[in-house]
Figure: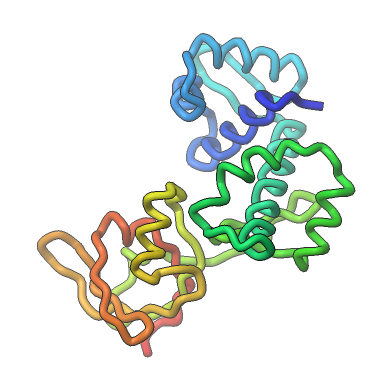
Length: 220
């Protein structure tokens, strides 16, 4: 059984490890907003519990036990986000902090019933995949909107930026999950993208386009 803080560390390491095999303590400190020395102390505790492998100056990696625990936390977090949006009418930019609290509930039976109650969802309100009770993720295929060409079309299936400001911006533009889009122009000067959605022309910056994930339909 892990503490609240230990679970937060495992989840942060898990997410950072999606980008690099070995996670540096400074990167963990930046994410958790604490001092590197405090991170090192916690990493040693996690290593003593067999949850991480740690070599000084070389970084941290999750053991099989640690990865399993981290995926379980991720699963609970994403299931609670679905519950908050689908059943309590929260907006997708409002659920993260609440789910951060709910993810630490220990009851396995509650989570299994929650999963069944929600209809065994495969993704959360931001399009991130939800692992099943065995820790398996459904395979998802997507392309960044920025990588589409003029004439390409597709469906918004996720985002890679979860900040409240970014999600509110997309909400204001009407670019939410499930929306059909088509690329109508890309500006050479700054890479901004003109898209057609719901019979409306929308211009988005290159930075925004980098974080919108699309299941591509090819050309119309």
